[in-house]
Image (cartoon, rainbow, N blue to C red):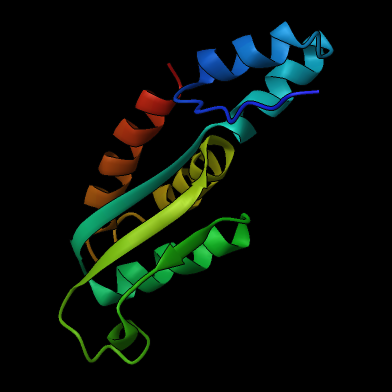
Length: 121
C-alpha cells in the first residue's frame, strides 16, 4: 500500500479522481462537490454581514472566522475567512441570496458566485 495526498482544485478534477478508482457513477456526482475545498478571505465586511456569513456557513457544516468585535458590533468592519467545500459554498450562497438586501450581502453574494464558478470548472 502507498499513499498520495490529492490537491483537488475543481469539480472536474474531483470527478476524474473519483472515476479513476471506479466509484459508482451516480456517487461521483454526489461526492465530487464535497472533494473541492477552499478557504476564501473577504475584506471589509459589515459586522452584521460577517455574523450572518458565520452562522450560515456553520449551519451547512463549514467554518468561518470573523473579528471578535462582530458579536457585539464594536467594530466597523471585519475581514472574514470562510472554509468549506464546494457543496457548502453552494448551500451558503443559496442562504445568502435570500438575505442579500442587508448589510452589503449583495457584494458578498457576487464574490461567492465567482468563487463557486471557479471551483465548479
